[in-house]
Length: 300
Image (cartoon, rainbow, N blue to C red; front, side, top):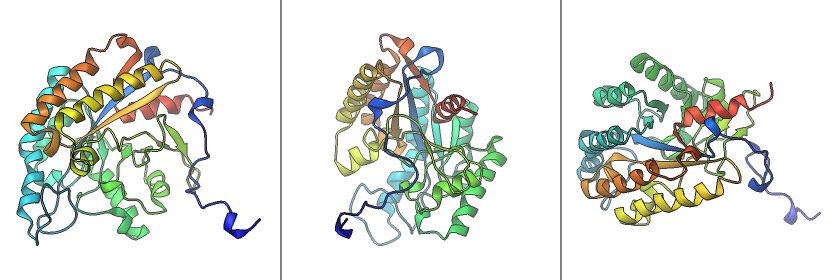
């Protein structure tokens, strides 16, 4: 075969598998669609590093964009928290450990609800794919230890800031005690990934479409249209899930959906999820619970 037609490099983490040819199973109590909220609680270094932008990037210190993001921690997250309480919705709270220094009461409020705390780096201004393997390993272990120390339970899951990985990230996650990653958006079911040491690591689906940053910031979608996207995605996946079990995540950031006019539309979308007919088909849960369930289905 010509080298021009040689197979392309792939990640080596999983084999191709069409979703139409998988074994059937159910979520707890016979549910068919697992739904979770991935709620990103983030902190950004002042005067340096990466961050989403509401306006043109300015020379540092970029007060416009820093203060807009900080609105999420001071106001938006608390408004969203009240909405989640009102609807009785659990969250998977994605935690930058810098929040324990900056606003520990915010993390404590989610922990007090019994929400799952998920590792999400130390600061969202830093990409871990830029780190050496030794430094990345240190980051993963330190974040896990800090969450355990401050909130009582070590996280079992991880989402990299800006979904940035090195080639060793899945291996390092498994080696430092994590059971699943949210970095990969390649499927609607949890997929077991290969790691160099053979430790299991699940890829739990995390959305890059039903996600307020790419939709509202990159595509400049209005809040009411993003809310309708949540509704439409849910309704379609509910129908699809009658044929096979599926996972639907909704990725939210409080500096975006915690803005009052967007929060009103988010409320409508989440009320729709909670009021769905055939509610027994729906499991509103957390990524960690999804991981634990599929792990019990694996042969030992």
